[in-house]
Image 1 (cartoon, rainbow, N blue to C red):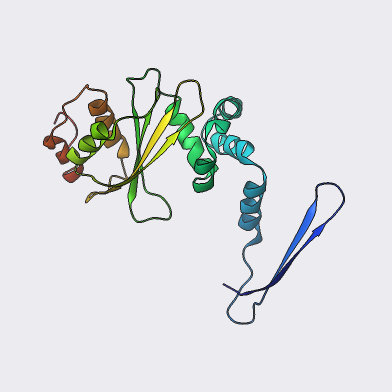
Image 2: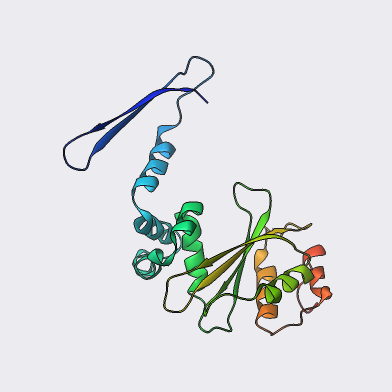
Amino acid sequence: GAPLLSWAIALEDGVVALIRYTYDLRDGGKLPDARPLDQRLARMVRGWAPAVEAALAEQVEPARAARLSLGHALDFPAAYRTENTAEEAASDILRLCRLETASDRQVRLYHPEHGAAARLKIYRVGGPLALSDAVPVLENFGFHVIEEIPTALADEKGGFIHDFAVGTTSDYADNPTVLEDAIEAVLEGAAENDAFNRLIVDVDMAPGA
């Protein structure tokens, strides 16, 4: 909350650099809590693969986190790394690892910390889905598809992520698994793709009820 007065960088011996920022705290500015700020800075400078491994270690045991990071962290293209956090990559890796064949699908519905629209990701191996196959399914669940960001991974299986911004009148944040499983079933051809699926979103009805 304070204006930046100046900044300077000093290069020291080896690979160490000192960066100094000077802020004016006289007009409502205040010193930040140093601990979370230090943690954010540490994540910024540790590098992509170590950051993904650390994020994975918060969700799975450390040995598996190391294996997953080694096998998948560098598969994400530069554009993805610019727009997404290591924590998001860790969540995506865990979903992609559940896919065994090109007919399998994984779905993740979530609300970003910054952004008005909910986001829904569809995961597949073997290349992208045709949008004409995916979008009507989402619309039958009552979603309004706003945009889609595709990400092709540089892995042997042809991992692919469709990241949709979606509008919905319902908040499924408390239990998104029911809806995710229902969408997966339709995408895999195990359930009907019709307008009755909208009831799962609008009235929290479980599939098959």
